[in-house]
Structure formats: structure tokens, C-alpha cells
Figure 1: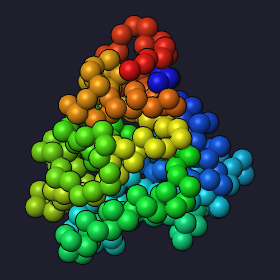
Figure 2: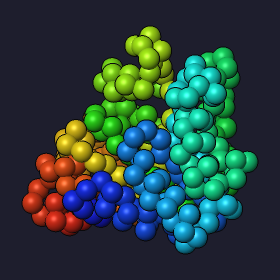
Figure 3: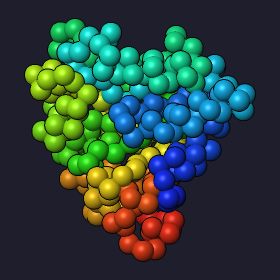
Figure 4: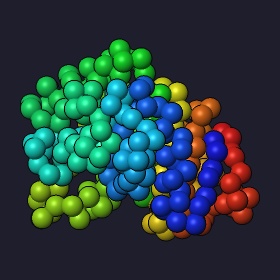
Length: 251
């Protein structure tokens, strides 16, 4: 695990973008939520100036809410269309998002198909990740197993509370999601995690310095050989001094 610390979220995102551009023309794993926004902005600027072309790249989103219409502005279908397909120039037919609508039996069946679709595409070259304040990656909440696959999950109360800022009322906030599993994520050839802000510092410390296990799903990233954390100084603020200077860490 490599740790890159920059003063600001924008600077950390620029470094993350350097690691992602090589996936152009391959398969890119797409995180959702607020964490990757600066990274997508950095990539969009490179697309605009002609330094990278994602037109032939395939993308697989990490997750989707259950029970939310794909046309809802806060569905991850909509967010991927807004933040990735348009600004990064992806072909819509080459970007895939887990299915969260339909009956629960249909959602569960399509979740299993999602891992098969990733494998059929040749696997993910670079997986972009954020991290939740409780250490979740994707929507793999604490308690998620290392061998978990894409599946329907219950969201933790803290995740529901954090997501409520995107919805008009508490009653609209989804309480379940479909997420790529830990084992699905770890099959990517390389992983780039971006995090910014003091609110993520405790989770980053647990992922990097705590025990590897289900209490902090992001800690499982230490089992992978090609993981880079791109952090701003606030997100790295609870790491040991050596780690804050950009040292690596093993399992």
C-alpha cells in the first residue's frame, strides 16, 4: 500500500488522476459519492485539453441504491451519467451500474450477474474508491467479509445519516444498496483510493494502521499488492508521522 499525501484535495486528486489515465481504453472501476468528485474533475480537465480519451474505456460502477428509480437525480445511474459519462466522454453503452430497481429477487439475481459481467470484460484495470467515515468501501459496511461478492446490503445508520444530505427528507433516503463485494474489488489489477477532509481521518487511520478485518472493510485493501491512497493533509492527519510523509504500509 502506497500513501500519497498532498496539502489539498485538489492536489491529491491530481496525483490520483495520474494513476487512472493509464486505464483509458481498458476497464475502469467507478466510485460514486462525494470522495471521487475532485478526481473526476481532474480527469475531465485532461479530457478537455485532449491529453486523454476515455471513449473506448469500459466502466463498472461500484454500487447503486435499492428501490430508487434509475432516473432519480440521486441514483448512481444518474450520478455516473452526470459526473463520468458526460465530462469524461465515456460511451454510455460501455458503462454499467448495478441494478437496484425491480423486485428484491430480481435485484439479487442481477447482482450475481454483475460479477460475471466484470469477469467477461477482462476484469478491472484500475478501481477508484472512496472511503466512508465508518471504513466502508463501496457499500461494504463493517461486518462485510473478505470473500463477499456483489450483493444487496443493508446500509449502516451512519451511512444513511450521511447520505440524507442529498435527499429532501429522511423518508426518501434508501436503506439498502447493491454493492460490489470486497472480493470483487480486490480482483482489480490496481486500486486508487481518494479521501479528503478531517471527517475521514479516523477511517483512514483504521484502514492503514488498524487490524485487517471486518470491523473496517477498507483494511482489506492491505491484502492487495497494488493500492495507492491519495489523501489530503486533513484525511491523513491521524496517521503516524512516517505515514503522513508518504511511506508505505503492509498487512
